Amino acid sequence: MINPVLARELRERMRTGRAFVVIGVFLALLILTVFLVYQGRQSTGVIEFDLARQTQLGRDLYEWVLFVILALVLFFVPGLTAGAIAGERERQTLLPLQVTLLRPRSILVGKVLAGMSFLVLLLIAAVPVAVVSYLLGGFRLIDGLKGLAAVVLVAFLHTTMVASLSAFTRRVQTATLLGYGFTALLVLLGPLLYITLGIADSSHGNDQANPPAVLVAVNPISIVADITTGATSTGASNPLRAIRSGVADAKANNNDSWFAWFPEDDIGARFRLANDGPEGLPAWAVGLGGMALIAAGMAALATRRLRTPAEVER
Image 1: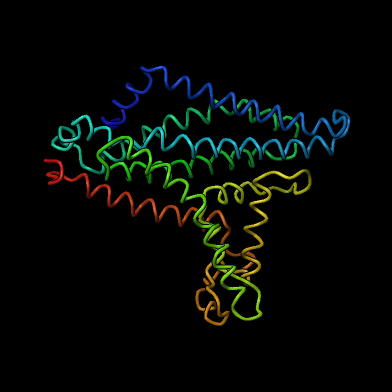
Image 2: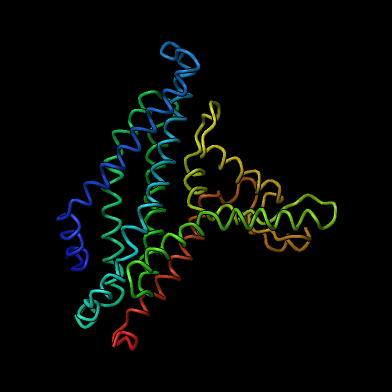
C-alpha cells in the first residue's frame, strides 16, 4: 500500500505548473552543457574522423553532464523538500497528520519519497541527453548506470537530511534558508577544513602536510566523481576528473589512509582500518557511509520531533 503522505504529495505536486517548469529548466541547462562542451572541443579541430578524440570527447561530455546533473539536484533538493514538514506546520495541518494512525516515521518517509520521486523523474528525463555522450564512446554503459545510481543515492541521502531539517522549523522560508545553508556546508565544509588543517599541519615541523583525507571523501561530488572512475583517463579536463584526482592525492599523502590523524604520524597510525590502503575502501564507500550516518542521525532526531503529542505544537 502506498504511503498516504506520498500519494497526497504527488497529487499536489503534479497539479501545478511548477513541476513542468523545473523539468524544462533542468533539460535546457543540460542541453546547453552538451552544446558548450561539444563546441569547445570542436574549436580545437575536426573530430569526426579522429576516433581517439571522439572517445575523449565522449568521456568528458559524460562527466560534464553528470556534474551538471548533480549540481542541479543539490540545488533543487532544498527548494523541493525544505518546506515538506515546515509547510504542514505553517498551514496548521501537521497536527491532523500526527493524530492519525500514521507513525512519525511514516510521515517523514512519505515526505522524503515525495521529493525523491520528482528527482527520479528529472533523472529519467535527462537520460536522452546523456545518451549523446554514450554514442561518442569513451565510457561503458555500466559506467553510465553507476553514475546515475550514485546521483540517486546522493539525492536520497540529501533529501533525507533536508526533510529532517524541515521538522525543526515553523516557517517555509526559514526551512529553505536552512536547507540551502546546510547544502553549502555539505559541499564546502569538508574541503575548507582539509585546507585549514593542511595549513596548520604544514606549520608543525618539516613533515608533509597530511590532514585526514576523509574530510574530502565525505562529499556528494567526491562520491559521484570516484564511483564513475573508468578506464579512460586521458582527454581534456572536467570537474569530476579534477576532484577525483584531488581525493586520490589526499589519501596518498596520508599514507594511503582515510582516517589517519595529524600532526603526529605515529598517532595517526592508530586510526587506520584493517583494510585501509591503496586497495582498501574506495572514496565513494567512505563518502556514502559518512553521509548515511549523518542522514540517519538527522532522521532519528526528526522522527522524535514529529512524535505526538508534540508540546511545541500546542
